[in-house]
Length: 169
Image (tube, rainbow, N blue to C red):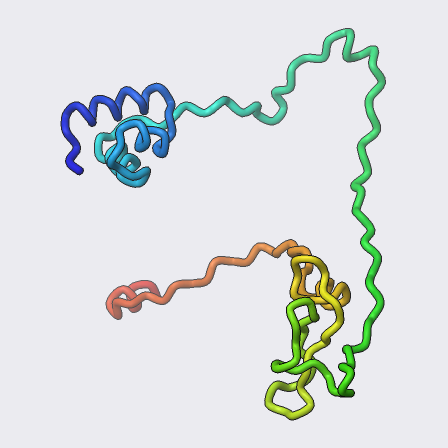
């Protein structure tokens, strides 16, 4: 698809109206969202205006009505309490064996137990949670909420050019 003068004018008009790149691509036809973004950058069209964000300390002045209403107490953070499921021993099949690769079914817990290189390796085999591959106990272990990460210092980069390395020393 070639960018004709007519298509470029349509692009400029729709961009000025605030349409997204995907919407513009659909209206023009025959171009992708990325093609529209690339053309916008090549044409140097201005970015979109974003709504102004209030700055810190610039809260509106309190009115008399606000002063008459008592301040609300800050809400305490409420964490949902999910009971820890009890440990369930791996399932023993009717044959007396544990669930293996050849005996595991669709609705059986696929949590591996033991070393796969050893003969006694097997799977939990207990009934799974709906839509999961594990029983309640193993799902709790597998699907944990993300932990907050500490900020790490940026790694130092090695200087590739030996002349610059000597100058930096």
